[in-house]
Length: 138
Image (cartoon, rainbow, N blue to C red; front, side):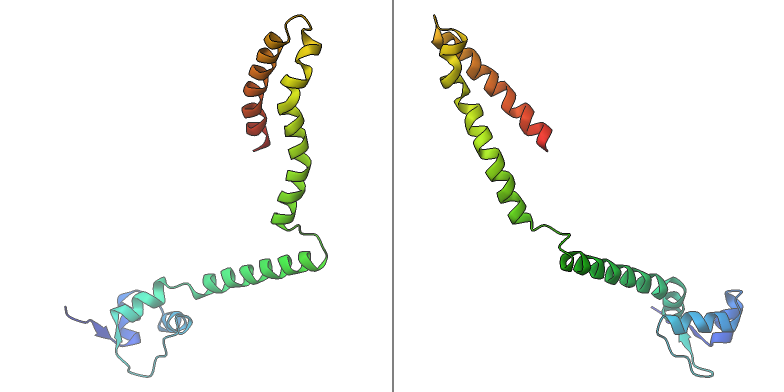
């Protein structure tokens, strides 16, 4: 493969650009140009397609996000995920246990003459309701 080389003025002319503009783009891409230096097509491509400014903006945004998170932690505006999961588990576990115990504990109240029929009906209701509740919590 043949390497194409030309000076900055020759590249600028063939690309219909000002040499100073191309020089600034090369500089932003981290390519230093000396007078009458031959530049490769790869150098020019990097200069025209690399976007160092956008990369710097992304880095600045990431740093700002990190500082915001650190500030929120210092101000106690954040919650540890494991701690929150434990709190929710501690709240929901007793409710779930009572919910699952409902058929056994309430069947004689629902149908004193046939508590087993009531137990089966309540158990079916619990089995039907748990997936609905799980889905609504997500």
